[in-house]
Length: 263
View 1 (cartoon, rainbow, N blue to C red):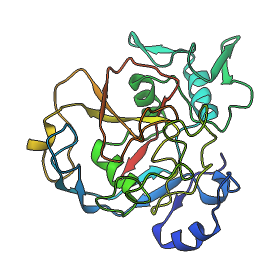
View 2: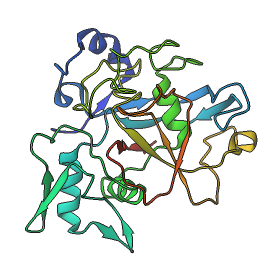
View 3: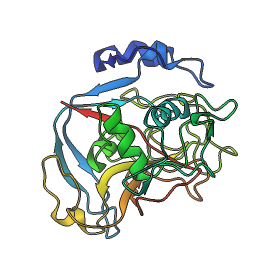
View 4: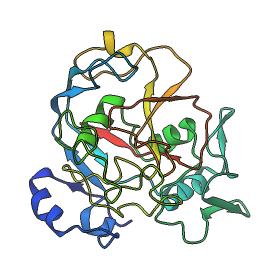
């Protein structure tokens, strides 16, 4: 992916003007991370579901991967550590992943280098993040980033679902390479669709009722972790606020992740 560097928000207007559909821009051209200023935003939705209530959250600045971790990067991680399990916890299910192993070396399956790594468990995502000197995003960080400045909107571009703006809800027959669609207002790709994404937080259906206003980190206890973002095979178009609980050992062909660095 080339040298990693920060993409500051002040450069976004010119960058976004140059981005078009079909992946004509590469990660090397835009940089691999986006620095977000943080601040206060409205998280969740109004109602009585697990995605509610809507509530104000304040975040410190952080830097997020501009796109989902690729199969190439995750294969490099696996090759370096030389295992698909740590402390008895599975990192990846090679049966559903787009990564293969041969002679103890891991590599993306043919043509999968620039696709999001899938079949990765929460343990694998967290281990990769630590290896890379990063962390998985909290739910609050993920939702703030996904909104791209569109407070209260259902999708990163507005309230109406547009199948041409994301690989979401059956738009295609599988994941697409990262950065194949126009980014959101913060310069982040695939915050709606392509693959679902692990977050750091444990899942709590009623957590929003009592969550702290500043930098919430999720419940202290709970087996399940929270997944965000929807995927290419989601039955319905997944909105920004939707929360999905999964056990941390879950590995799916439509589930990946991205990382953050906290300031």
